[in-house]
Length: 348
Image (cartoon, rainbow, N blue to C red; front, side):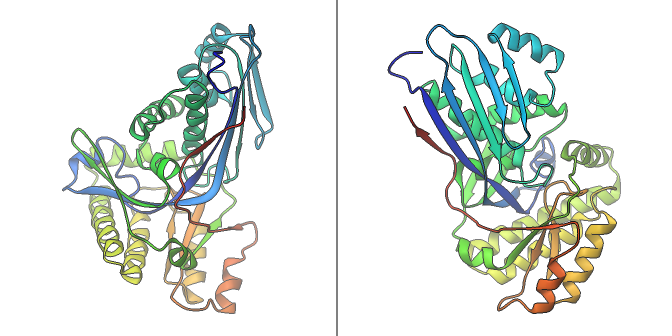
């Protein structure tokens, strides 16, 4: 390791709440829908963190530690890491592949921690990957250009999932804030929206159902049904695209109530997207919170479990509504929206 490069770097990034248009960011869906096909999301401060520390001079050993999962993997050098990747390497394979793709020469210790629930539908694995790549790029003195980081992260995650991935999960960790992300032939357009994040956060509650989802399987089922021309899925995706445009336009005009009504509409359409998106527990939650005064709910991510976003009316939250949010087996997560994306701090 060159003495001009940092020896230790810490990185931090938020996850995301997808407000509208999720699934449309999977290639080639956004190219086949009437333009603009876009997603709208906002950064949520349930952060992923990563620390990358260069090994002492002369050491090529690589150690990967996941604190929240209680897992660790060690390799004598980069060649052993590559052999392990060829065999699959186990539950830390995404982190190992990130090291293989982005770490500077020599040994290192990579330590990660995620604060969002596994399989929560909040883009937690994507946020963690952006955080790791940011730390590794900084350790190697490489420029952290957002679009290049997104492209690398998306390719690595597709390798780990062995299936399609969308682009939307990477931009809130990279940039923070509320974003409209439009997929176009040849590239993406990212539009920051002028949203009062504190005001928006007061209108949202986030419930983790306690059942993790598998976004790869759910997304693949939706993509296959759409490309096969199954009419319910085709209609649902077109309706989701309409809702996403409405959410973007209303937020851009400062109409928070109108935008949140459109988020609820998107959530209702999403339930019809494909089998397995909803569950009996999610449907019961929706009925209960609506009966207590909420405007509605929206499944986060691909559905099938994970987190559910509850959209509140303006004004104080009633005691009945608060009680309906406290559900056995579920966890009410803090909604701290943030304008801060990826940060990297050089410690030595």
